[in-house]
Length: 467
Ligand code: NAI
Image (cartoon, rainbow, N blue to C red; front, top):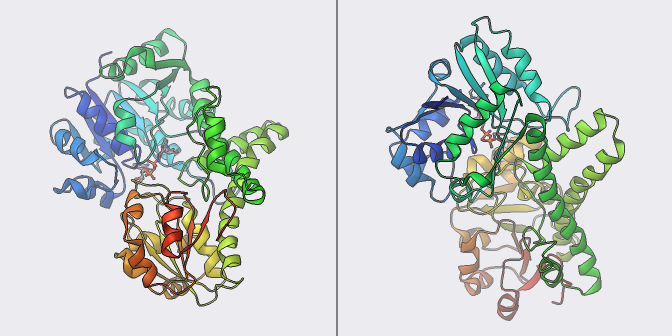
């Protein structure tokens, strides 16, 4: 089957960029991205491409090229399902917040709703593609729902997990390390796999398109995220040991990263990983393992999360300790709220948890982030439920001028590695702060020596304080 029309359900951080790149690379395929969130679709359709709802370097240009030509954003889900030969499901699959598996299992209610909608609407031949990250064996649930369609639909289910990283999504999609496609190993299944292979093969070298059975593909995505997060927690665990032994975690990372078996990437110590995926996917892996009675496997992966939580808490405690064990009434300026640079996504950002800890100690927090809105910051804090919305508003402020945000502060905490932070006039910032003026560099991006020469007390992750 040669694919000429694609629909993607879910216009989020994955659905939007992924489909924009498919549309750019395959101008003859009609790509329609649908979502029930009207405001989000309206933003994707905004005349000013800089206002699309996902901030990613290079994305406005891709959308500008394809939108209206063969890329469309719509809220008419039924119509898009009906028209498409291939339907990607790219909806959210967050950790369950209620009932059985609360706090660990993936909440699949949005996936199930999509499947039911497809079952209700679709006719003829369809290929349904799992783009969302899903627990291994979800395809069998989808199959169960789809086969009760009543419309005589003939369908195949593929798993095509997305490996893009936010902040570099466009580059990752244009030149992926690999594309993974899992499907049924029957003749029909292999045909469906091949149809999707041919879409990607327009711009991805064939040797980078891996095909597997559907279960391996589903599990590989969870595994990839678990391995990546595990590297961060591993180096972060050693950062604490470094702070006690005068070893320097940056030197240790370099020393081990040059071993080609280990490799240099994902070995940077920090205040802890965030993002919508790592924690949720590991918790999901832990839950699945436990549900098969594999307690040792579950415990092993759970430790990655325990270490990450510890790292965030440890950072907040270090701020408090260095401010003479009390931050009550003291202003602490946050540079960065996004979970990493070059994205406006804040889900599970370390900044949220560090702020929560400091607010519990009655600190006054003021935040500057180049891409995150004030509304998002308050909504992240309110979501934790630690304080009322009014209390959060009273204790935390958000500013659009980093110099003002730092004015009168006892300390600055660098929570996101935005490049612009390195280029500020740090002497000017120092002059307007209370003394001693502290910088807590949660990302190890600052020029420690230069800051110390200005007069700052600088605290990094994984090196002993020598102020
Ligand atoms: P998101 O929350 O940004 O977007 C999901 C969208 O789906 C929302 O706009 C929501 O309104 C929409 N939606 C939910 N149910 C719907 C329905 N029944 N009909 C139409 N639209 C519906 O989520 P994001 O970040 O795009 O993630 C999607 C999936 O991709 C998740 O499973 C995630 O684990 C996975 N993933 C995410 C990555 C990331 O970097 N954010 C990377 C790789 C995978």
